[in-house]
Length: 513
Image 1 (cartoon, rainbow, N blue to C red):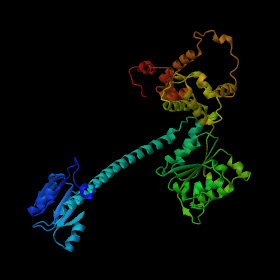
Image 2 (image 1 turned 135 degrees about the vertical axis):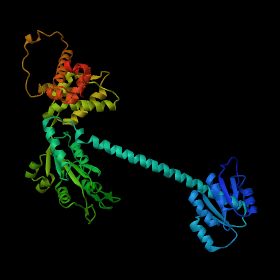
Image 3 (image 1 turned 90 degrees about the vertical axis):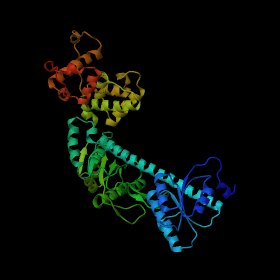
Image 4 (image 1 turned 60 degrees about the vertical axis):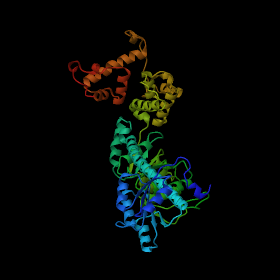
């Protein structure tokens, strides 16, 4: 098919609206005849009438004469832009007036300038191409609108996700009612509002990463980035590249420039986990950042200033490493402006019930199951176990339990790992001592020989009495020496109605919580 033939209608076509403005009736008739088969033509003999058509009709293309009495073609097209900026504009003229031509191109922003007389097929081709431009412009406008909506939604989602992250990594999101943890929260709450360098110490799995994120997201740098790097996970050269970046060709495989984590975290926080594993050369470079706030990429002679807060963590005894010459003393003191030592889980066993229930809810959501909680015997074992892997090991144990749990809704002793059951047995009562011999006469008054039922009955009575005496669930939890979350779980599991928790003389009052 030739180009001219392709300009003719083939089957059903979209009826674009075309406005034709010319003061000569013969021109209007000719244009209507040439284009009327394919398009909807609106023909008028003045610019004023043309504007009236624009106000009431959907016009895709405007064809205007250049010289007309009253409003000129250029003036008319300028007003077209105001009323319908997306409409394509074309101009017809029988004059070779260069200044008018330049003004029409600049002010009327015409798509094409057509001389009189015209060839009908050439006119069809020009109109067809102009409408293709119009269609493309419309599609681009739709895409731009969709992109604007998507960007707005993305910004809203980013705000939501940031709030979710801030909530997740806030101090309120860290479970710890033990006195040792409360002291830590007091310190971190204060230090989070400063730019002080913090060194977090403690055994593996005690939650140093979580606490570092809480410090960042609770402080003035929370709008900046939080980046983390395990310093023991990479050899020195790769670690140097990861932290400080490199220039193209700095080493084999460096095919392009790369920004380091210090540069990416500019204005935010960098967390150096396992900083005690760094080599002497890396320790020198870290010291320079802490002293001068300067970094230098591998393969570059230029230094750059960065504004980064440094949080570091280690499970090593850095003071001992300094004494043995394996860690720079000046870097050690630069890192430990504030030192926070996280206690192992075995030293805050009172937090285990709350942590276990928290991890059970999280793991249960992953497998789309809701568990009521733990049996008394199972919880006793969890509390008695030493947890050498600390909180991380407890979380992994609960996740394993939920993945392998049967149809039962309460986690029992049989659901626990063999090494957890064995470890708790070896540890005795969880405090390193023995419970001592049991006198047979102690069982004389036992009516129900089912241990779990008897313990649940005792717990039920104690919970009801504690809430009644304390007057609130928070007070009852403190009286019983357990976290409030654990008390709530037990009340739910034992199905204790709210009425039973009220004091008899205040049965008509509403529980404050």
